[in-house]
Length: 190
Image 1 (spheres, rainbow, N blue to C red):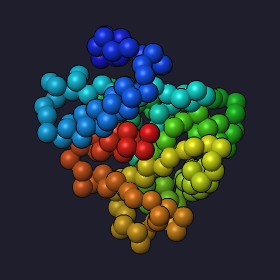
Image 2 (image 1 turned 180 degrees about the vertical axis):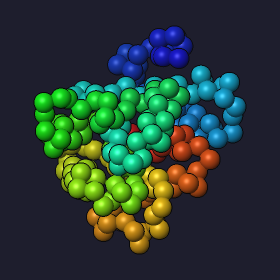
Image 3 (image 1 turned 90 degrees about the vertical axis):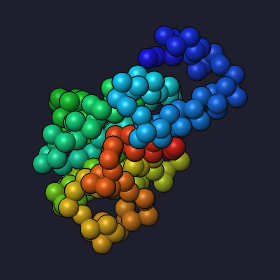
């Protein structure tokens, strides 16, 4: 349910206080998804308009081993919460190097979702994506946020690279509804 179909004016047409009220309402709706049934999910279509120069709400970084699960979660994020996801296997531009694709697509994203697993942490491109995301998160020119998700088989802080330890992680194995928790984290940081 988009803003137009709900008779809610588009974000640019609303006064600043109304935008803040809508953001708070979105956060509370995401939080409420844990308590509601699937037939009410149409009520949880979110209202976050992408800032100028951004193409995606979430850049998805993951290991090829975890691709099936990650695509399932990204589809859930797009369909249930209207969060546009950049998935490398689907959205990288052919003819560009992987490094160029990673940097270019992260620049076009509001947040980076790091799906952490042993394979992701030990892979060259996983390490490169995670390090670049952290670097861009600390650079005021990019205004990028990181949402780390422990997808599987990691022992909390002890298995995380030192540069990821300052970030609070979502544990996908502990969450009943991982996409809802990710959406909640997105709207909290947005």
